[in-house]
Image 1: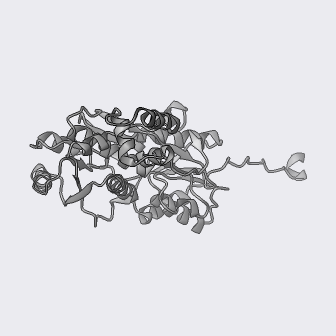
Image 2 (image 1 turned 30 degrees about the vertical axis):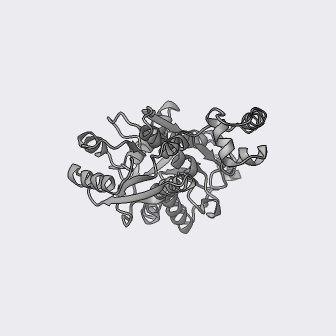
Image 3 (image 1 turned 60 degrees about the vertical axis):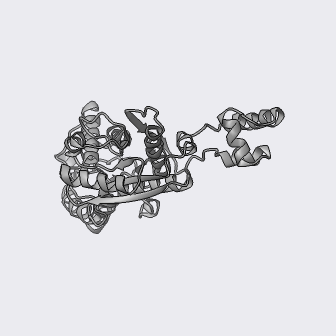
Amino acid sequence: MPSENRGPVVRATLTDVARAAGVSRQTASRVARGGENVNARTAARVRRVIKALGYRPDPIARALSTGRGHSVGLLTHQLTDRQMGLGAISIMIGVEQAAAELGLGVSVATFASFDRATVQAGIDRLARAGCDGVIFMAPWLSAAKTLRALDTTLPLVATSEVPEYDGPAVHADAAQAAGDVVDHLLSLGHATVHHVAGPLNWISSQRRLVGWQDALRRAGAEVPEPLAGDWTAGSGYGAGRQLAEDPSVTAVFAANDEMALGVVHALTESGRRVPEDVSVAGYDDAPGSDHFLPPLTTVRVEDAEYGRQVVAQLMLQVNGEPAAQSTILPHELIIRASTARIPRRTPRRESARQRSR
């Protein structure tokens, strides 16, 4: 659902419970696990606080309590890849934050290519480093074939909606989120929405492209030819230069915020005002997108929640519990000043000479 710019949702922690109940964290933990060896009156007080705060025991904490889960592996493409995009970096930050909050170490292994042998070597390296499981950042369409061919007993969780891979995987519904952007722009009176896509060998690009197309078709709107980008602002700028030459363009959805920034730059440079002449929306709610000129309408998936869910699904497996095949993360459409209702075009008044003809 659309929303104004809001801060992240804060979850009650065991430390919060202990502080509110006036007990140690260890006592709060014992009560949360069943109340063994805790005074009955104290246990009752802690349980009341647990209920009042809405605290829920964490599968990660259960894994830690077994003496396992002290290190997780993160297998990802090379960090120097200029096409990596801020979205992928945000996932990594979310994973590292979630792990750090629970005292988990994170070992990172990177790969330059996505063939089975290279990825297998990365997983083997993480296993030798003592990792109890692997978080697999698999952004490309070829991921399914590679994942199916891996030989490992380590628990795995993917961070993408990998086609033909039955999980576990944690991801947003990118197609639905893209559709929400298109629906928003159409609701403002735009006849159609142009699209600047990310690299077409990326899963997220394909899902956002599909969501854009489907939303336009549902509305009976024209589906323009998408323009190809590479996640960078420079590629968005190049696409924006092309779009600026077409006076019929009034709305643009870029597959990430960096490309949207490039689109806004090109349109403004060409004398097309945003949003008075052209509305522009992005995806990812990248840091600083609220300080674009104008501030950018975009899609937000909370990085902290992304990381938490990825780590939680991995640790469920480490602890011998079943993980969800697919965990869908919530998203928000953040409406800012870069999108606006299309101005009503007032017909030119005829001159007296024209009326007399």
